[in-house]
Length: 306
Length: 113
Length: 112
Image (cartoon, rainbow over all chains, first blue to last red; front, top):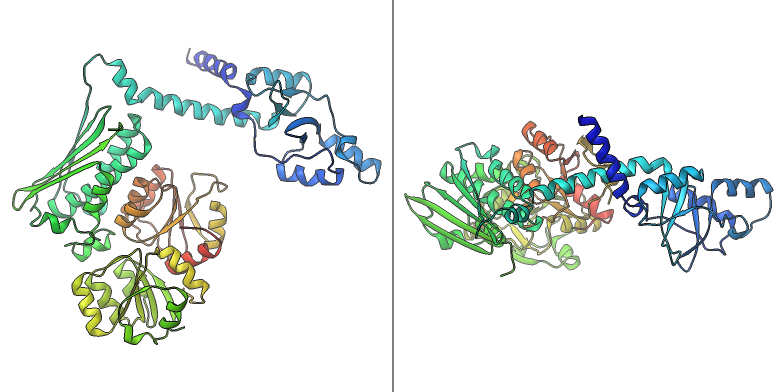
């Protein structure tokens, strides 16, 4: 049962998949005035034995290894490529489904084929039957990943839910682990935001801010709590601890100011940049701290232009 | 090459130790981990770092380094600066990153391990 | 610059390779301070560091760095290597010092 479903899906994708999504677009071509002695170098550079001959972006013919051998055997002096090129080889269009390309290639017994725009005959790519399956599989992998992301996309979730406002709320407890092994919560937050389909720049900012805050919790407060709220407008992260508190918040915000002991510095932290890094990543950053009671950080990252 | 000759090639801000600029640079060294600097730093080194605390100056002096360069416009904390001034350590500051400055110093012939 | 070229310039040992050696990095960042990575390291850079604990890889993860090279022959701690593998990073080591590694890559034309 499962197998049939997979085959169906692959067949469907083969019909959906267009030539342009798997063709090679980065290759060297020759001009009609070029000589046959240049052909070998182009073949080597392209790692492909199909050499398109192009004038004003338009395909006027192709050379294959057969044409090249023919010239070598003739022992003729150097001749222009136009003398040996094929002018009536099969070509493909970029919008053509891959399945029809496969059929055309096997009917014409061509292994390598040029891809041209239908009206203008402008050359846009080449396709090689020997790499076709690898290219198709790579494309499947991309399509599959895209689909997965789409499946989890926050907007999608938000659209499907009938409510006046939707807010996804995540709660994380930061246990009192050695600082050396910290960072797990920030990593989980990143993954959660990725699955929700949040824009990658915003994920980077949220990740960096959470990571710095998590390391602070481990270095000074023996753990704490992260509350992350995601809605279509913003990501809001509230971090609270019952640690010793910060006596002078203004001083702590000065770049380079640090009370970190040496062992924290040897772990690569304590350079007096943590709070500044958090501030730089946030659209709104608030910090409230009371000695002997604890510290609370509020980080807001806008997802919409205000 | 002396520190003075180096400054003619790559201008940097002199934070302290202006009177010792004739000191010779033997080798380049780049690290932010104090344990590594204690283990591998050497006499006559020009040391590139992002760190700014008191230990930077203490280790620079202990290892008899020629100069310390703070990269990316980092500033020594006041206590570290006082110690560098009073004990005669050359401290320079640049806006360049450790990677960029290391590359340029090497091109000027200052080798490293 | 391709990963293959970086490996040959720094004479690297490869501890994990999750991408093709043909793929490339456009910039380098060299530091042992993780806050420095977080503040200044560009996405997709090569990170050179001597810090071998889990945090070296965490900071790379946060800044979307895919290639980490440990200098002075440092070996990443087992938990760092394991997390790097999980996040599909390429993990390299070189015997060159930070200073020398920077200068060799700079010499070869790689930018910050």
